[in-house]
Length: 158
Image (cartoon, rainbow, N blue to C red; front, side, top):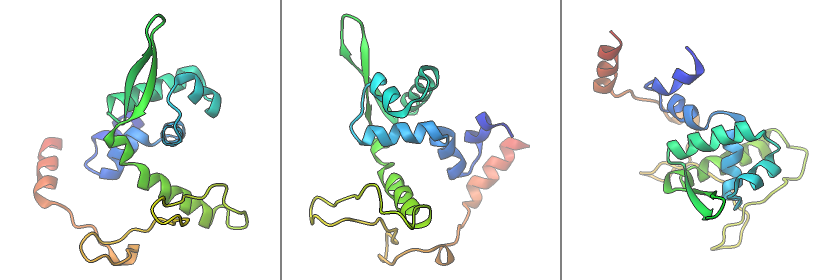
């Protein structure tokens, strides 16, 4: 399978990766959460080529993760702002940062802390069951496939 076909898979992880699954794209999203909005600022902060940045921003706009709005009229220039769909990626970003702090940089002091504005404490993201509130771990969660959906997918492929 080619990388550009991965979004056609019935797997939700594959479909997500088809939009945000390369190194530059998620760094663009990270920077958008940090308040960066303009093309030149993204490029300067990331050190990515203009061509790659342009392609990634275009894909994020196409998939409605970012919205492109003009901020200058005479020589039209744009800002890129997170949409509701884009802001929904924040828990993923927090979880990735926490994973890195725990498993990649264990001997280093974390470079950034995330502070909950309500209680003013440094937070660590946790996943809990939406029904009972119990902390989740991989040994307690099992995927159960939607049989009707899988049959429909199999028919299409036949």
